[in-house]
Amino acid sequence: MTVRIQREPFDPAAEVKALIGRRTDIGAVVTFTGICRGADDGKPVAAMTLEHYPGMAEAEIERHVVEAQARWPLMGVTVIHRHGRMVPGDDIVLVVTMSSHRGDAFAAAEFLMDYLKTRAPFWKKEEGPEEAGWVTAKADDDAAAARWAAAGTATGSQD
Image (tube, rainbow, N blue to C red; front, side, top):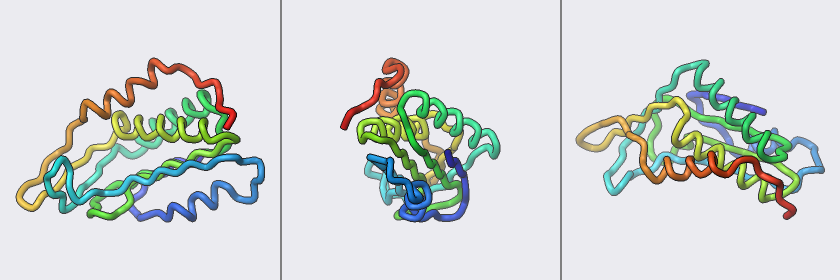
């Protein structure tokens, strides 16, 4: 498991390569890269700033990675989340999951992203051309995350 919170940009391809290494027992690698958008709900975004509580944020993300590993037979996980000021087009977050089967890798990546989007201890401020403001949680994101509480543990996929 790799969990990092950093200010610096990351290279998704290099992170995947580092996670896979020379292994030949992997059947699926799923990656998700979240990118800073230039608009949110139709309003232009000039930049966004992410703040976190150092130490607590890493521990919370690690706790959810451990939960993902308990739910699905994962062979590796990397989560990188940036903090600081970013502009549209900048990478914000990377989630990489590896498993023998694609279903497990996809489910684990989606589970982790739903958690990061709704419950990870980050605060997001968006800057528009005329104003800036803190972003509040969206009901759709909360509903996506809530389904995992009802889902329980996965049984594994055979694809």
